[in-house]
Image (cartoon, rainbow, N blue to C red; front, side, top):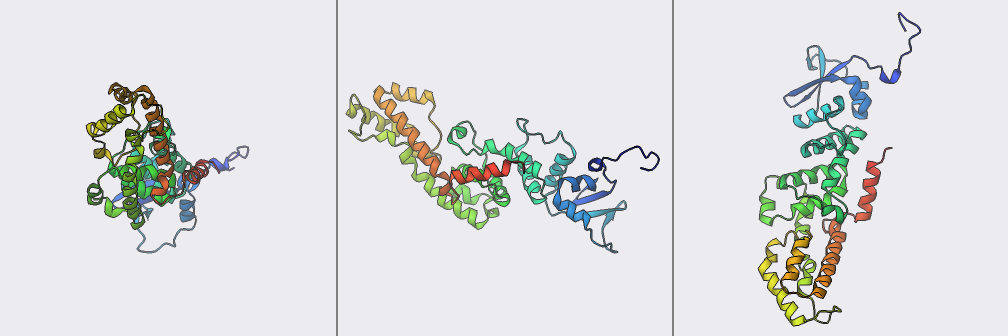
Length: 310
């Protein structure tokens, strides 16, 4: 090395001072090209084989400008995640939903594997693949579900889709197709929504079938005529038909206590709990196929591979 031959260069941490300017619409970002190349194979190829200079090549302050066709807000958070290690920390650190989704899309597009995995780690708990995990999640807003379906389809993260579709289809058909984001879905995704929307509603009768247990179905009811009348009365009191777009939520223990306090015998309460749990599990097992997706086992394997370090 010039000036001191005893010094050894750490090649992996010897970055060139080359600067590049990225332009997304009207936003510009000035960054070190070497760091982008180290993290992204796409940018590495782009900067390793640059276009020959021409008179009409755009430059700012003497630095070349590379145009990227992405939303400026997504490019900003993507670059911050690369250049600021504290900006997009792994779970359990909390991040904004829109940041995780935007970084996922660009990390996939520009091949930044560690950011892709990190974004998927953040999104995974919001879109569970097991029923027990679903019971601990909160419903999302409709715009986030539309955005998730578009992005997860684009990047091949199909295991995020069953819950995104399910949450979206808790809306009425009118709410669904009149939303401004509906037209942004690909035709295949729109078709999946329409088919799944109907299938989802057909399961309400199965999941709440314990409210109309057939006499002599194998239970040990103490007074079937009385319990059945009370169950049917509860159907009308609880107006279950008003929630037929969202059949999956589990009854809380307080609801079951109210169920028992309604006068239904203990044996019927136990049987009803078992029937309700079994019907919810059956619905969950069939959920991906309702939207034309592979089964849970295949989706779980996709998830495992995507999150593994190559």
